[in-house]
Image (tube, rainbow, N blue to C red; front, side, top):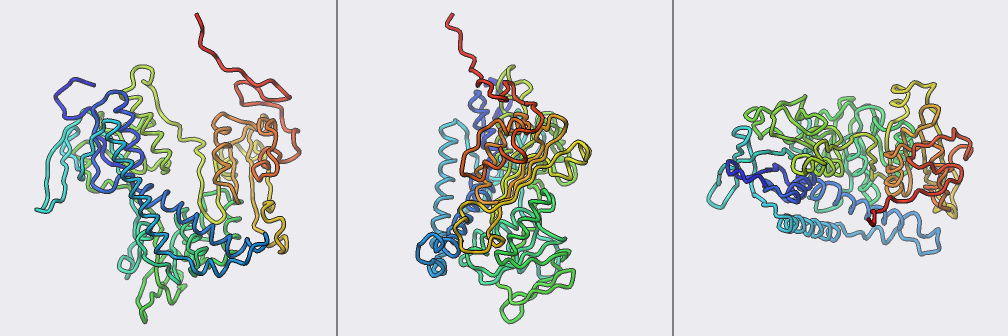
Amino acid sequence: MSGDNKYDWDYLVIGGGSGGIASAKRAASHGAKVAVIEGARLGGTCVNVGCVPKKVMWSAATIADILKHDMHHYGFPSGPESASKFDWAHLKKARDAYVLRLNGIYANGFTNAGVEHIEGFATFKDAHTVEVSKKTAGGEEVWEVTAQKILIATGGRPTIPPGEGIAEHCIDSDGFFEMEELPKNIVVVGAGYIAVELAGVLNSLGSEVHLAVRKGKALRNFDPTISDGLDAEMIKAGIHIHRHTNGVKKIEIQNGKKTVTMHSGDVIYGVDVVLMAAGRAPNVANLNLEKAGVDLKGKYIKVDEYSNTTASNILALGDVCGVVELTPMAIAAGRRLSDRLFGGEQHANAKVSYENVPTVVFSHPTIGTCGLTEPAAIEKYGEDNIKIYNSKFANLYYGIFTVEPADKPKTIMKLICAGEDEKVVGMHVLGMGADEMMQGFGVAMKMGCTKADLDSCVAIHPTAAEEFVTMGVWGTSSQATGAKISPLNGAAAGEPTLKSKI
């Protein structure tokens, strides 16, 4: 692209995870000469020890729940016996083979896009020079490469807190995917989405699960209605929640089992596995950022809204920046960054928005969320300017179950509106199907929908999602729209702008 032989590459990406790969391929599509440095498996955390294999395990756990709790209500033979014959080794082999196939797809993607994969690990020599090291049969091979622009997309890693016996006797979330068998008794430490996801999976597959949270409950940064609802469902599912532990103090081995002592004095005996999911940290320690003039803000790389670091030719995105640590966010940021750098004048100001990012927690049941929580909305707009719509019901799936209504799993929905036009500033749902329904509503929120806009969409019946377009007294909210072409009061659908035939 540049025709400048001063550097080996126009664009050098450090890190072969989702964000780095997306940015590299987009840059190459604009004609840049691009390479990606990665010494581990391609795909990063998401593909190898995160979103993808986690979703496989969540799917298996969901099947187990259906076998144990649901199928007899629909006239099928009771399934607990089938669930008890679950073959962890079979699932692990199939899951790992799938991930390996994805690694190959990423490698082929590089070839098809014209991106070179440099196998090894990078450290800065200066702002334009990176030293690459790779272990070989004979020891270690080290060489240097140069680039006009360099992207840091090295992601994050699980952290293990200090304490007696903790590092020696714990696994982290990466280690979860290396387990060769289902533990009978496991302690999951943490209050974030990783902790509740893995606790839910293990509980449904048959482990006795203890979830140790530092304060009063898990997912404290989520809307209180949703986090309280999940808390109740986890208890109902049989997960033992240890509250106000202030973290793990020590882990000891007694009679072949682990004894876990919390700072609160709470002690859990007879534990097979302790899974630490109490936090993550950006992968920046070995990069020698100071040699490149890249500053940190706390533990993260300091960036502006355009992914610029404090070094003029070095960019950063994804988990190393700590803004919105989600795979699709890193992918979007990577593509827009390459558009800006290499896509010409029409993309000179390209960037992503970190607002109203829809996300899902694959807990049991699932959570979907987008926008502000109720406390955040009140803080931003004032309580007098906020209107809340709530709904709680049992999904029709559970309608024929011969159990007390109070015992049926609940779907909880919350719509947070602000201002006289009732602009939707927060949407939150807990329950069956939350993971799939939130994507569409996320589009509506990104387009600035109001409560009236939601009401203008005819409900799809019978679904859980229809509740979001029928909440409150339908059709009585302020008749204001956030749409470019109003959908209110039976208005005709807008027409596309067609190419001129002249």
